[in-house]
Length: 423
Length: 199
Image (cartoon, rainbow over all chains, first blue to last red; front, side, top):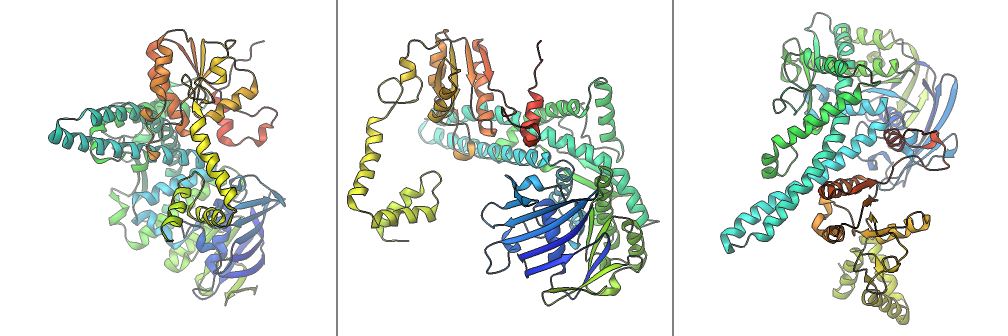
C-alpha cells in the first residue's frame, strides 16, 4: 500500500499543507524544527490514531486552532480510500471514509498501515519494560484491531482490582487499629471478608482477559524471534546474535503448566507451543487451548501472591508486569549493548514488525524519521538495502547527505512552515 | 470560587451524574437568572420525587406504593426472577413483553473504583427472596460490560449452592443487522456463544 495524498489543516506547525506522494522513496529534508516529523507523525496518526511522540492529542492541534484535520488518500491494490480524521482534543475525534462518516473513528484504523522508525525507538532497548510491552501490544493491534479492545478491557480490570486491593489494604489496617482501640472490629472484618469474595470474581476476569493478551503476546514473540535475529544479523554482521524472550511474572509461582518459564533463551515459549499442540490435536486454533492453560496459571499465580497483594494494594501478577527480554549472545542488550548495537537492535525490532505486517498482506508504508543520522555508513547502507524494496518509504533528514545514495526518489524541502517539492 | 450560596449550588449540581464543573456553573447561573416560580416548581418536583416515590419492598423497582405494579400482578410467574442493575432496565425488558416473571433491581453493579461492593447492592434482599425455594430460575441481566459481568459472576457463585438454574442473557449480534457491521468484540462474543442449530 502507499499514501497518494496527504493534506493537513491546523496540524502541529502547519495551518495548511497539501502533498501529492508516490510509491517508492520520498525524502523530506530541512533543518531541525521546521516540521518534517510533523508530516510523518500525521501519517502515523492516520494509521494508529495515536502519536509516536505524545500521549495526548492536544499538542497535535496548531496553537490557537480548535481542531486539526488530517486527510490522506491510501492506495491498496489499486483501490483508493480517502481517510479523513478530525482531531478534537478533549472531545471525541471524528472520522470519515470516502466522504461518509463512520460511527467510530477506530473503524478506520488499519486502512493505512505504517511502520515508523524514530529516534524514540532507542527506548525499546534502553528503556523500561513498559516500552517493550507497548511495542508488542501496538503490533498486536496493528495486526488485529480487536486487541485494542482486549487491552482496554485488561486495563479496566486492573484498575477495578487495584481499587479493591487498596480498599482491602485500608480495611486491614483499619481493623487492626480498631481492635486495639475499642475491641470492636466487627464492621471492618466484615468489610474485609466482602473484599475477599469479590476479589475472586476480579481474579477470574483478570485471568481471562490477561490470558488472552498473554497468549497473543507469546505467539507474537515466537513469530518475531527469527525475523529480529535475521534483521539484526544483516544490520550488524559480526555482532553476537540477537535473541528475544518473553519474561512473565507467572514464573516460579506456577509449577508445571506451559508458557512462561524463564530458562534457556530459546526453549520456553516454543515448548509451550508444542505442549498446546500435543494437548489439542483436533481443535482448530490451538490458541484457545493455550489460553485456557494460561488462564488457569494466571489464577494460580494470583492466589500465590494474594497476601503480598493485599499488603501492597497492587496487582503483582499479569501481563502488565511482564517484559520482553532482548539479548545479544549471552548478555542482555539493556546495559551491555553499545549505542550502535542498541540502535541496530531497535531497528531490527521495527524491521521485524514490518516483515510480519507484510506477511499478513498489504505492504505497510515505512517511515524513517531522522534515523540515518544516528548510524555509521555501513549500517546506513545495510538499512537502505533492507528498506529499499518496500512499496513506499518516507524519510526525514536534516541534511541531504543523511539520505543514503541507494534510496533515490522524490525530495521535498521543508523550511519555514512550507513544504516544496524539489525533485 | 463564588460566594457561599452560589458555590454551594454549583457544588451540589456538580455531584449529579454527567454534570461537570463547567455545566454545574452554567446551570447555577441559569437558575439565578430564571423566574422564581420556575425555580420553585423545580425545587418542589425534586422534593416530591423524594417524598412520594418509593422503592418496591420486594424487588427494589421504583414504585408509587409499598409494592410495585409488577410484584402486585398475580398473573406473573413466581418461579423466575430476572436480576437487573437499574429500574430503567426493567422498563427496557418490559417493552419486549417476552418475560413473564418478576424482577430484582440491584441498584448498580460491583465497581471498586466507585466504592460499590456487594453490600451496597440489594443482594442480601435477593438471597432472602430465593430462600423460600419457590424460585427455580434466576436470569442475570446485568449490563454486558466489565462491571456487569463481574456482578453476574459474583451472583452466580453466590447462588450456586442453592441449586437453582442460573442463566445469563446472551451477547451477540443485533437482530436485523448485517454481520459485516458488527464490531470485533461483539462478533467474537457471538462466536463464543454460538449454539447448535436443531433441525
